[in-house]
Image (cartoon, rainbow, N blue to C red):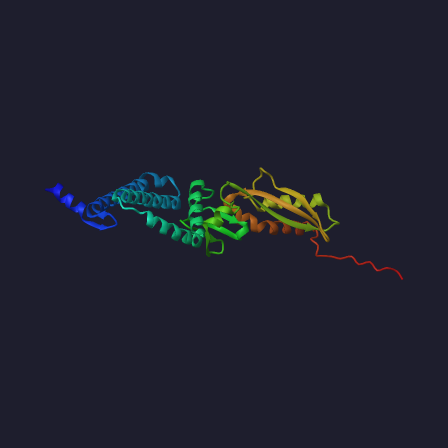
Amino acid sequence: MPFEFLQNLDTIEIVGGLTLLSLLIGGIIMGVGIIIARTFRLLFTKYYAPKLAQDSAKNLGKLIYFGIIILAFLVFTSTTGVDFSGLLVAGGIFGIVIGFATQSVVSNLISGIFLMVEKPVKQGDKIEIPGADVSGTLLDISTFSVRVRRFDGTIIRVPNEVFFTSNIRSLSSTPVRRSEAIIGIAYKEDIDGAISVMGKEIRKSMPFVLTLPEPEFRIKELADSSVNIEILVWHPRDDWDKVGPSLLKVAKKALDNAGIEIPFPQRVIWQAKQ
């Protein structure tokens, strides 16, 4: 009896050769595909997601789920026996039109996948994109865009394509960082003496600065009004806010205490004799 019932379903045509029996089989395939997709996503979330960054795990879970759903749909279409050639031609033309309109969306999607695979930075890293004037803390990498909380507290959204093709400067990937500052002294002053007093004050007032590598001083420029000295110091990554903004202040204090002049811009004017 069930066999005759199935034969009857196979004789009832809905449209374009699609019968009730093939539709029933396709529905079962799609149902099984959804169950498998949810099971794989659950297993991935339980056993593998904790090993990945939160944003990468979330996006990979979506890719696994919808990838299995698409495979199940392809199996469904192959079992129906319906000729989709006409639909494919129309869909191809429509796809070209949609492709031109959504090429940036697809580009952002593919760039997001590459970012999750390559992992140039991770959630919580402090980053800088010089070309895009973006700097701050990376919040997450989603399917189409990246969110960055800037140092002023605002949040900026960067398309994945821009993020992936830009030079990304990581401010958190190494345990130490180098801070730099430039300060000028008058031409009449002794350069070695100025370097000596600044080095002593830095070691005294800034315990966060590392002794190895030791602070370095370079003659940066013989400018119009001053000899500009570049100061380079190394410190733990998390102490940047204690070193970077204070370096010039400490250097100026050392020069002031030693009576070393930091000149204003000056011009020498020669008057020719008549």
